[in-house]
Length: 63
Image (cartoon, rainbow, N blue to C red):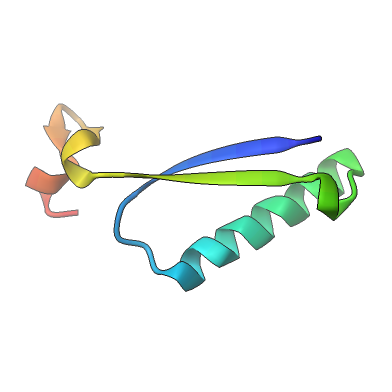
């Protein structure tokens, strides 16, 4: 059972997260010849204050 874990900054729409799940699933189906129902995708949303970019939090960068 393929399992993909995706970490993203908070603030994405439900539609965007659905698109990620769909496209990651399709990529694993194609790459591994796995049945779609066997693929698992977990999206973890990280608060902007907990995500560092170049030594600065994404919150402070205004992302």
